[in-house]
Length: 228
Image (cartoon, rainbow, N blue to C red):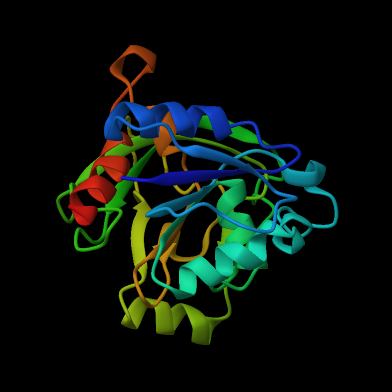
């Protein structure tokens, strides 16, 4: 699988996701600076987590206008899979590639911890290695992670099955989930084609048992299976 990781000023998970991709696919991803205007041929484009442009204006708002995003949008229209993780999810909404927006956490605090998620769909390029209804654990690290959309948009994405991960109503340890106040407990969703996914938790930080877990590894394994 050929993959590309876009690096923005302020990205801090670009190398993490590159390591996970190489470990799963056996191939090094191309690392492309946000100021470039072209992308190498790839099966997957990843917008990584971090704090692009220092989260000025709104998280992801400035990065959404980086020169490389025109190429990302064009490749997405051609059917290339696009994965936005945390800040990458924010960028995808700001660029109009996914509906809704990511707002300030309901606590108004930065949160960094493991959360439990429920897999809603296993028929997408990103989730085919999971079981529907399965509970998985991945870490979050964000201050602007509350997914928001108006009621009409929420009804539409629910009806079209675009929600792929939700925060569990109650975590395995008994703690209430939904750490950020996301509408309808939404943690990850795809676009209408199923080929663009935004996910607030970090699968690349749960891709190696040596660093705490492997539940996120299956996002990358799913993409490999889908492409073969």
